[in-house]
Image (cartoon, rainbow, N blue to C red; front, top):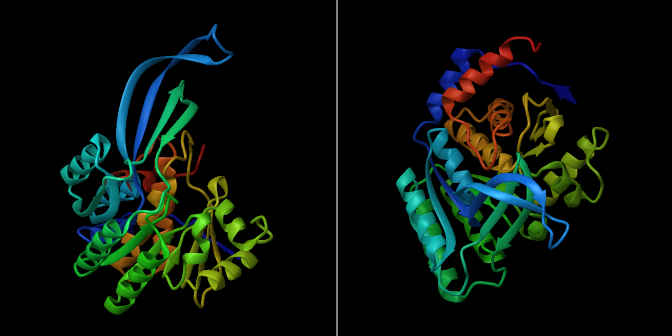
Length: 338
């Protein structure tokens, strides 16, 4: 496998980022609210051997597929969202935040039988103490499915590409997945997928799949290491019938597989890692925008996504990377590390 650790020249990177501006991307999948409660631990509870967190702040952010939206917006894209929310305060807040940020929310379907998914993380001294989730994994009803079908058709008629962001909460199911594949093939839209293990049997005929190393290992039935990467890439592409594959490997960077080209390794560009939450959302957003902007060069797109991921893992919580941040970070990587 080839290794590519060449930084962008500043003009090349600026040209790519400029081409990405205004591209319209449909994000389909599981939206949720990421709640972060931050504080400090100064004592252990007398009631049980657990830390007592003195709360200093609380904030809510769009999460799951909605975090892909946030990353698209930060990079200059114009996203549309098709997803389910509950008929509750969290769903209302999520809709308002997405609409206020510039995302199209006509496809955000309200299902009164399911709550909006919320992940609440308790963080003390930059360390997650516990997480608790409120969600429903029950199948949604025929009315919600029909609303989602209509929203998919309307959105696909006006976008340049599609991202399926599967968090395993039930929105990505066979009928709607097949509909998206059909719409994208008919309209010649680029289709990217961030997969979830529970739905591996659903996936087929997408342009790009972006599993992490653990998910890749679960897809092919063996641990994905440096020695097994090439075999894993071949088997996953065959299983999902995908044209291209990017396996994110944490501190080991990314592995890139595409038709007619030798696999390429990209070493990580992260200089500090505080929190990997949502890094996969950053990667698929950057990859999709770069590939839709053209020309469709997967290695070039992955180099951009690698820069963006290096930035967001140096932040806490679900984070994004802007074009200006990426240019500055690339400039930093043009200089030798001390």
